[in-house]
Image (cartoon, rainbow, N blue to C red):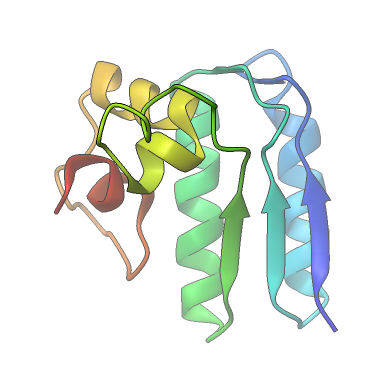
Length: 118
């Protein structure tokens, strides 16, 4: 059985605490975790850090954490880019804008590596 966490439209310093609680509860459940970011339209450094920390936490526990999102029609995928830019364009853009992608403490499936092609 897997746990599912659905993010709202915003994952910023103003509301990251609620998402942290939901992710912690899902990770404590002992199953794989799916984070649905389909509605996510705004993310800042606090949100990116939370998603990275959740991925590292799941990896330490030997469990999968998958972040899903809606592909934007005519967006990144249509311009010939795939991966994170196609699945979660707002997250990929934030990672690039914030200078993430230095591979510090990254794990397999890391958002930063996927966003930067690393």
